[in-house]
Length: 571
Image (cartoon, rainbow, N blue to C red; front, side, top):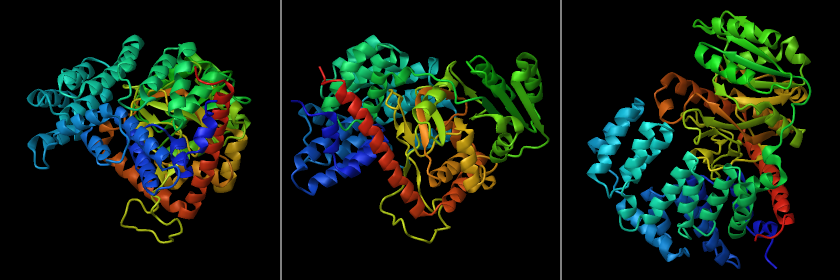
């Protein structure tokens, strides 16, 4: 009788299960997890052979997520004891051989970095296309061109960069599998399921036994072809029971959670605060009032704006009537104070559900019911949040379920802080979602430590409990950045956790990546607030949060695997 997914998962060493339950995607995250698996395998013991096989699978999946990156290929090949298929080893060797990074003093590299710092995407595109033409067999500049194409989203510039990155790639000796994998990804991101499936069918075992079948199932799931998708996903899990993210997404599809809707618990109030973003606010309110609000009203606090915000709010008051409540302040009091002010209004105190929104988001029509469904699934949650995607390139994710991590080599009981460092207590949220386009591996509902304040919902009772324990959103973290994260940490200390609704995708106009690099004042404020936040919570406390988090994620995985096992063996 075939082994159950639950039994196969339970055989994986606990430290690896903890990492994989946080995310089973993100090439850097998988590469680090693979390195830990390899260390355990080399320690010997009865399960060494299984651990070597697991290491190979993890690293090949990481390679599949970033197949042009030569240093990763070199790193994988540096472990000769890994049981890699010959075809995979050949592809890795070809990528390693064709990776030609410019030297530190190379003018081309310096020019590229200057353009990137200025966010000059058009000149960057011309430069990268030219570099690929100069060295068509080299992968370094192709990799940069593909990264910029993903960042640009859709349109002529993205198409030109993608062409530069992929044109002629399969003709380079040994790189045909790489070209095929990237062709499948490009088709998936365009919604061309037929072409995506055709390319994936030609990949075979290059990136491990489950990589192509899993992506085929995810592509079908994204296209709404659940009946055809589910057998493929379950077959992929049979070959890669370590794929926790895939298990969670598949279980939600099987149970109907993927499409579940429910009103928010009791009367709801939607809260926004804004400052000098009139056009963004207008677009946000357009999507809010075009959605199913389930009887909720909207309250907007104008933080002393000096642009056209007052006119935007006046126009919307005329359209929405009593469904729009307006507060006007003479100065910008910052995000934490604005959140606290809104929560203290009589209307907010009378509501049973409070939803905070940023003033630069686009919402789907059923967004509030999606949050309601997650709250119904986890009625004791301290806060419910969502998946946040880049507005211009919605396949790039900005925020998902927030899981706490910090470097394990640091002793958790060290009392002193290094005030010369910007990381006095270097905990952070896992960033696996930033390392790969969105293939659907974050499409599930589940517990986490924190969710983004871009769009999150509280029950009144949960927010009151949080405020009673440690006050409201911290004024020390004004004017913005990390105040929502720090409040979530105090919520954890009070015994509640966050819940992530991965079936709600909110598109955010504020860009990340290259666009953020030039925002010097914003970056400086964020760094300062991160420093302050890290001093507010002792390392021992954060270690306790991480331990509790592992238990919660373990319970969520057990539930998902039980659903999959009950559904029957893979066909």
